[in-house]
Length: 95
Image 1 (tube, rainbow, N blue to C red):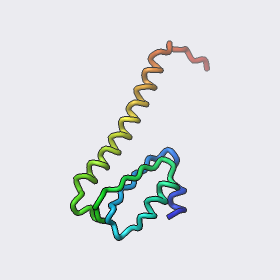
Image 2: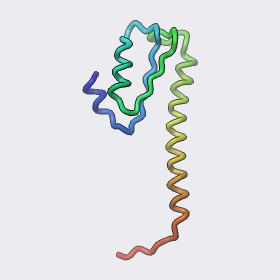
Image 3: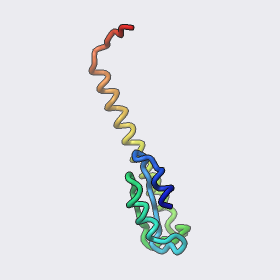
């Protein structure tokens, strides 16, 4: 697990979702991810098992929220770059 975590790019956002009743993956694995991956968010769903049997809607909501927040950040950054480039006067390039 450690070598794989170390290959993740620092600017790559990572979400780990774990159920508090998961008996398949040890809780310490999620904690280790949080220590080893720089841009990592850990969320624990109270009472969820490994398959999220009764918590699928909550899991889907978390994952969609994580994706949307990443898209929003990218969109904000794009808009900032666009607004900066609009403020500049066009320049003639000399070759």
